[in-house]
Amino acid sequence: MNTNKRTARVAGLLYLIVAITGFFSPYVRGIIIVNGDASATANNIMNSECLFRFGLVSDLIMVTSWILLVFALYKLFESVNKNYGLLMIAFVLVGSAITCINALNKYAALLVLNGAGYFTTFETGQLQGLAMLFLDLCKSGNYIAHIFFGLWLFPLSYLVIKSGFIPQILGALLAVAGFGYLIDFFTFFLFPNFGVAVTPFTFWGELLLLLWLLIKGVAVQKPATTEAG
Image 1 (tube, one colour):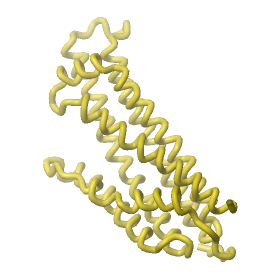
Image 2 (spheres, rainbow, N blue to C red):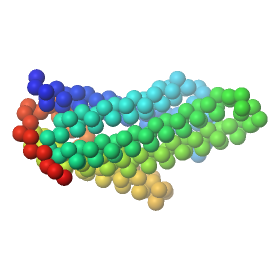
Image 3 (cartoon, rainbow, N blue to C red):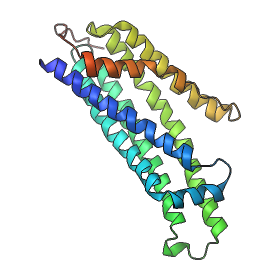
């Protein structure tokens, strides 16, 4: 197996981990968090604390795998355009930092509900409301991170299209996925009552690239023709 094929397979495996953990955490949130009901949400967290913690750890595994993924992709595409590769890395690092802060908000909700000693002066309802506030901050932070979930896909789209060793249609679909994240970000903050996300309908480019890298890989890479910008 040549170096490029091995790098592609590693990137595909990391992308698979990102996809699985990135799906698991929202799945947990959907089970546990009851929108607008702090009491029910608090009871769900305490009754399923282990699941809630797994969701939190899943976020951190996703971030770690995403960072490793973008460096693997940079290695794969560095002969295409290094500047676009570096831009891709920058977007991922910022998005990862925001996601880690979101995870901290999620953990703060758990600390509040577990009744650490410095919360003894708070009543149960106040603790539940405070925990819900942290969870709402986490949700809002996730949508802020959508900016970078989307933006990193644009340089990746360019690199795929220009590479010559991955079908160009995958690059086009990645751009569509990038716009999907950005649309959901703007919708959440500008039209909060809209209530419809488009990313479940635009993610196909990422899924197909994942499968291509994992199963097909890249047989050969074009001779080094790195563009200056």
